[in-house]
Image 1 (cartoon, rainbow, N blue to C red):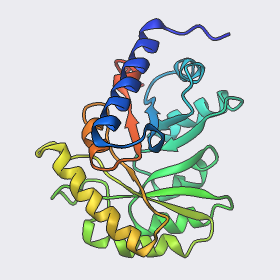
Image 2 (image 1 turned 90 degrees about the vertical axis):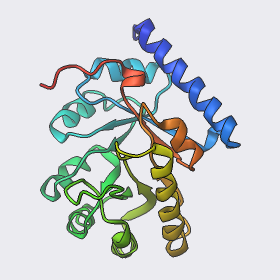
Image 3 (image 1 turned 120 degrees about the vertical axis):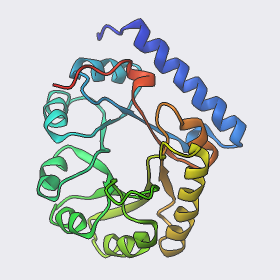
Image 4 (image 1 turned 90 degrees about the horizontal axis):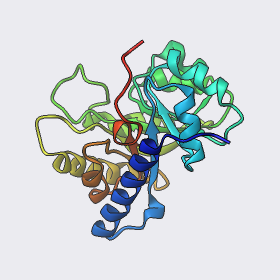
Length: 227
């Protein structure tokens, strides 16, 4: 039996209740929400505790950290999400364990993922800032990128993903993402999911239709020093 840190259990319970409250405020069902616990830099032992608390979805953003953890925890009923920027030359390696990729932002990455001979769920990452150096496809190019995904039989387009900019209210940014989501759904009705909201802004994301939350420190606690 896994020993669970009581502070971890408390944080998980607090966030779960806060998500339920935000759903109630937004007139939504908690069943619409998938909480992906982002375990960046945390050890496999913490993920094992999360699984014991009922967590089924975990997120990582660096392949070199994620791969050994996924291998060590292969017997647990976990769905691994890759939420960081993904280099095309690491696409195949990442998909050895990750079943959901949240950061598809260019056609070359779609081409690399198309070479993987297993089904994958993907989100299109949208850049909501004016900085072209930030990760994500420009809003005006989202539909073109969606079309490249839709012709690949092994890729299932779930919807869109974004990180809120730091220089504007999160809800306004997520409102723009929701509009882009509607545009994608006009092209691909099944692509109705929205990956948005992190530890500091998940309530605003829920209010704007987010279905997948990427929550780290609010649940996991202070992130360990980068190895």
